[in-house]
Image 1 (tube, rainbow, N blue to C red):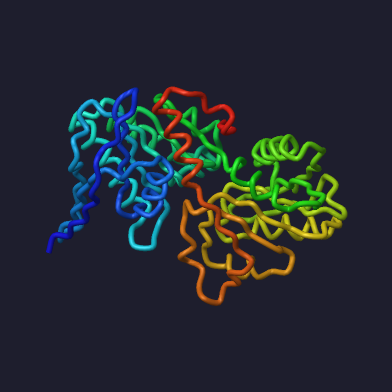
Image 2 (cartoon, helix red, strand yellow):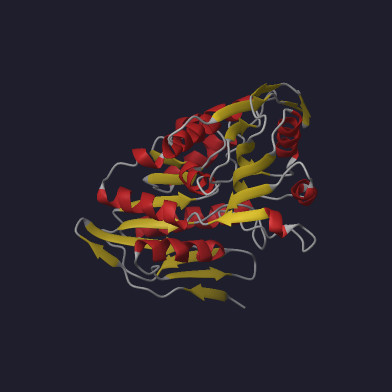
Length: 340
């Protein structure tokens, strides 16, 4: 039997032309939240899955001459793989362009394959670049992501416009709720130092007084992580460990334990994408970590009922994504959103 899923809405008008927002089924909840933040409904979209596993995506509202944004987070699961979600997103971009959209922006809160951005072994693929070629070949005019693994590699992979939002604005708001705490921002590895420093500077400006910093040395080869150097001052402070994602949680736990050993009184992890692969529930339960704060770009469906959910805080990403979409549509600057 053919399966059909349909959203109903009408396109919104703006002084600069029509803005239309579509959300693919697997990211419908986040798409609806973004639409609500924009103050308009989600445009009508049909998705059909066929018996042999093929599918189609079709806009039901007119997009002729419109400024179109299509939302799809491309993490794997719970019902579709990352490849399935990527394929549906790519086909939707093609369908929207064929239907006459003047401009199509892919809003991809979590972008699959972003971690495979360089060769680490002979003849390794550079999959990020191949994914970029797919987006461009289907006619994407702009790609908006949230906290990609390596912003420089991501931007270099694309020829069309890219907007690499960071989780810093969301985490600054959260950190400001820690009234009275002395805080220090910790990067769990040297590769994330720029991300951590961006957040530290933003937090320092918001608080109006100095914020400490530290980093942990990490080296990964053939899946084995080594290195135990800790540099920085966290004694008596709340250590805020900043990273782009949590997979199994090993890197995060190493950083938390190193910060505790260096004298941190509390450790709070600020991580944009919570993949929560097997083993991460144990990391969440570890006493070295007081709290893990993630966004809703990836729902925590992999965490079982035994996971200590009281240690997990989920921040909504829709307000930040909606603000970026609104500014792009109106031709306004994104610089104060702390984009890379």
